[in-house]
Length: 227
Image: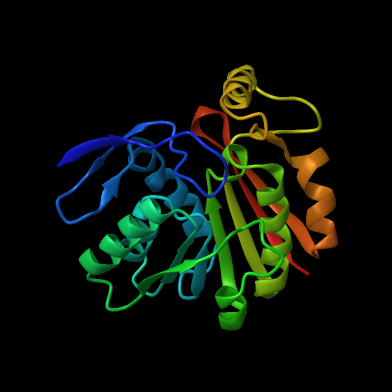
């Protein structure tokens, strides 16, 4: 198993902020995914469909989808991404999976695009899932994610976001430091304000805030429901 570090760059390039390992079969492993997948899964089990079709946006290494389909045996999960290195890892996780076809993809999807093309042809989905993307991408990606979810979700279906957020102009000290570090790397990055930045766009996309759940390390799970 080899080690690699992703380049820091604009949206559409590998933007991992940590050292990752790559197995001989091409699967990549993220230390943060190893830490957060079980706590996210615990919340996922209580708020999300466990027998539906989930579209994951910006699937990264692919570990979350592999974990969720192993933990929830009726769940069907579709990877998507725009980064070639990430998509290669996702393909390797699909090949490694024994989920009987319940783990699939990746499809090429630019969250910031006006149309999600292949994903929209497969809509509606029972849920959209996105972890740790919107703070390490230009704001257009967050805006596109919300508008795209509004297009591909069926009535009552949910969008789950995971990551650091500010609330009504207030942000945890550790997240404020993190946001400043992100902006030094790329001025278009940064921790987004759920209420001031995202809610107006969500409302336009007919997404209703369903619940906000506090997670370890000052992260949140934010769940929207399609009107």
